[in-house]
Length: 159
Image (cartoon, rainbow, N blue to C red; front, side, top):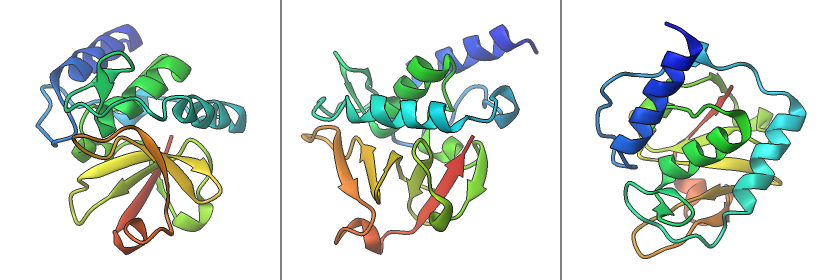
């Protein structure tokens, strides 16, 4: 499968879903993406920070229409890397390479939940991450060591 075909499939996935772990028609594979440089990782984090305040919208994947958690991640990675990760949180659990919380760097994905993640965000450094939390909310920055998030199981993924 060519890179353009893969990118087309990823774009189709972006139009199909939200943060609700709906099954995708065609799963994206980590092999379709390259390793991020430190500069690219920082660029992803800065772009995510610039979206703080955008309204939450289930299935949303644009600043004008709002974001859900995986839509936010897809938008940022697509804008900064030219390719987006898988559209659902469940698929993000198999995206890139796992790393430890102690090795977090800007641009890494943080996934929350039990055996199958239910929420995700982009790590921006300093113990903070940007995410689209819930209906009625806005894209915001939270701390991993905050009262709620420190009690959640977290998994880290890196390209």
